[in-house]
Length: 232
Image 1: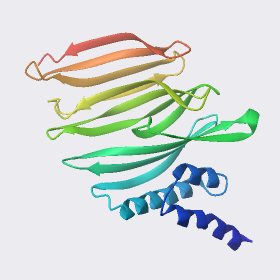
Image 2: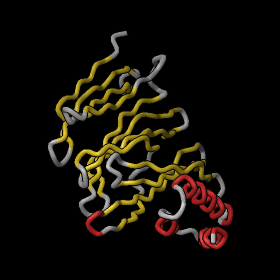
Image 3: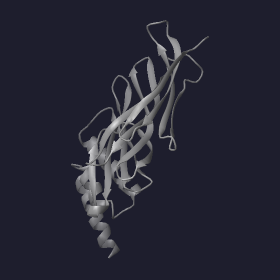
Image 4: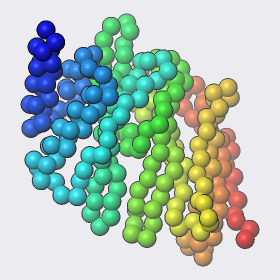
């Protein structure tokens, strides 16, 4: 019996290697094999598809899965890199939403989560979720940027990103360690941020931006924003 089950699981994997439908693959196998195995198999098939299409300068690097504390949301997240004049990351995500009243799962493919995921926080069970992570890129040859990202998602009707914020710093910030941070206070329902940036039009003066966003029951509204220029 074990051999028969194994063969049935591997057949779709082999077929998808030629024309890979990642959403269907995860929907078919999510309750049959471990999530880590699904991610590995998906990355192998995505890579095989790139090789068959002879895509130069592109590669899939890793797949991982993330769950909310209440278990209603699971994100299968895949990251790769595309290189031309310089390299930037790209992403693909399949979000599984558990619908208890229907005893079923919705599987949604999205490109809204275009950053490296870190965690999913339940803001209001069954309705609102915060997804935290990190982003990076190279917008031009002389500059690299990086920082933290947070998005607010609603699952009332599928998955909808209703608010997002990035705290970003740059290699053009002329200090020893350019700073960027996002933090969430679940008691106050606030998100605090701080990052270093520069004024390219004013002799590259360095400044730090800090602020607070507060959840109003539907979205986040900015309560405070302070800009302080480097005194040196």
